[in-house]
Length: 267
Image (cartoon, rainbow, N blue to C red; front, side, top):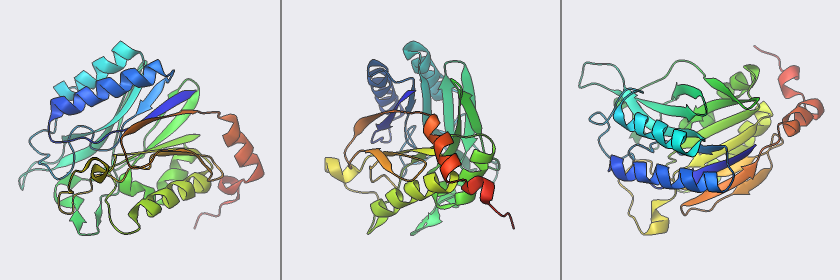
């Protein structure tokens, strides 16, 4: 299965961000991809208001993404914001939409980024359950950004049949942060003996854009990682489209040679 990771830099404008989805989805399809992954906060970048643009999965922004997926005959995974709880000004949920080729599902980010001076939980409600989906005989697990620091989600997805874990991120910049992102992607692949598709927002600094305070706006370095933790493909900080051919047989091979899931003791 040929996939693509769309390392984009989104902004405040929803229509402009949709244009990026349409452009990169068309390029992914032209390159032979059957599935294209966009980062967290594709709908609107962090550092902007979120409550005013949050919408249900059948709202106009999600419906436009769905139409792009249908037009290109491709599966799209993209980060958006859906309504959370009411009261106290309201909150949103940090949601991954998965749509296209007969697939309709979503995942709400479980682990909220209350770290490095940013408090995601001030404006976002946490999700409560892992989500997997099947496409073309391959099972995919979903995760978002800070989730990558928690191995249990990745092994749980594997227990639910995932051979591939998708991580969509808008990773916060700072000393050592890009190195942590790459290390964690490799570690989670090895923990769960899954292929990891780690798709992040590009680094605004690569385009001469100044960061917005503590808001996590991306460092780039989207990557495809083998079940043994080997980086198979990787981008730098700039926007770009990464292609990779996935072979689920490598997961079976890894789990035969290195049966960490089978050898686990659960305490």
